[in-house]
Length: 144
Length: 144
DNA sequence: TTGACAGACGATAAGAATTATCGTTTACTA
DNA sequence: TAGTAAACGATAATTCTTATCGTCTGTCAA
Image 1 (cartoon, rainbow over the protein chains, first blue to last red):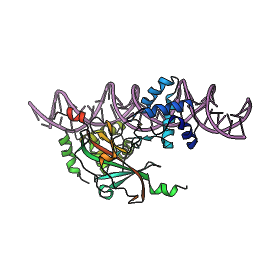
Image 2 (image 1 turned 180 degrees about the horizontal axis):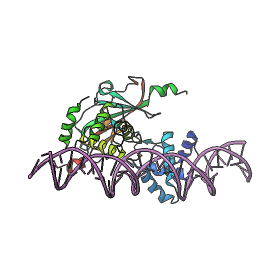
Image 3 (image 1 turned 90 degrees about the vertical axis):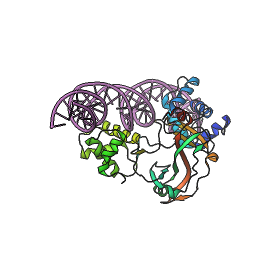
Image 4 (image 1 turned 60 degrees about the horizontal axis):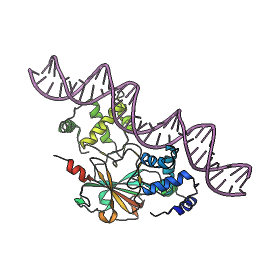
């Protein structure tokens, strides 16, 4: 929608990555998908166009696209199950560089709207806010 | 903090689970932890008290505690990496029963406070809100 | 208190998702 | 167009989590 086929080459140049056939097809197919596809789902679709493509290539390029900011991943997750030990109402600050999570009290964040029902009839139990940003440590490290 | 050692037995009775030594030690140790420990971290601590405990037992009981609502997991994660294909500003409605994710436009959710810096000096890039609740399909299925 | 039985335990194999390795091929720059 | 760094495909390896299974332990009724 926002990137036309002609700009894929420029997009790659911007990010200093090579324009390969696999990369281009992958990009176009991903753009045509909606929702929150998994690597396997993307792989299944790309294979229809490039039967010989490897799953590893799909993974490598999805990561590349995410790192370049071309696509975004749904909720930074931390590989492993994590249990919440803070029983006070709070949310999370997630560092986009080091992926560290720290807590912020709900009161310090400010209040959220609390509709009981959202469009579509979704029944709200609670809100979980991830504040994505740069933690103080990474701000200090960041040289540019 | 909120559950005393004496109430662990009651807590188990409420949820219809047996009071075992492993379970009790696990519970107490987890309560003493802070942050967002992983199963491995919990396992490492519990092993100091019960060297013979199995990692599988730790996993099984963490799940049990989470299902019972005794503890909560940090951000419902979906097992696999998911890529965001909706480029409009939006957030997510996550069903606590079936774990499905659907999008909600930021405008439909209402505005969030947009401090540039949060307590501790965390630099905000963006907010990602997960609205946890029950999707219409699961509301229909829900009999009780 | 005891005895039966469901459920919990530990050990470990299996499974799923992801990443690393490596030899071959391809794209970019001069 | 040649040289080189990067990308590719195949697949082994890793990591995290779950399943299996034989043994053991809580729970509940007698």
